[in-house]
Length: 160
Image 1 (tube, rainbow, N blue to C red):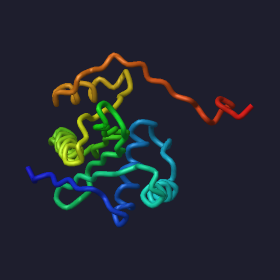
Image 2 (image 1 turned 180 degrees about the vertical axis):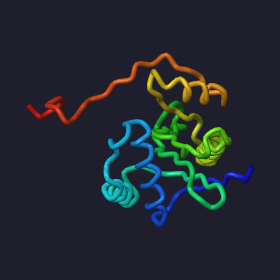
Image 3 (image 1 turned 135 degrees about the horizontal axis):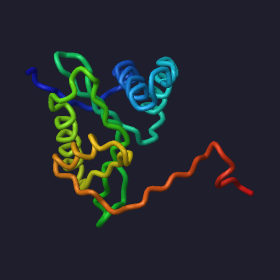
């Protein structure tokens, strides 16, 4: 099995990131539900240039991008050590089960530790038992938290 190489993405990787995000949308949203790859590329390029906090790590196997972690560093956090929040972790279908996800998570842990970050937080859908089992195998602790979302496409939290 070829070694998985993980590194922080740079702006030249925007096309590879967009393809993986497009595949991620198709995986979770269903066939035909993903935004056009051109729109996805525009979003990736904007997120990489506008300093909005989004970072990407790419995993490569045989020189091809096969995995993606979308994450952000958030501070202050407990005792000012902050946290790394994983928004998305996605592995291309052909390489699932080949430890690419574990390599990405180890890379994220190293990236965080170097910066003094002391924890990684993430969420999964309640029905995504495969992801839950994966994170628990890696040593993640299931938290008793309540997750909230404000849907800003409605009139919630308007100025009036």
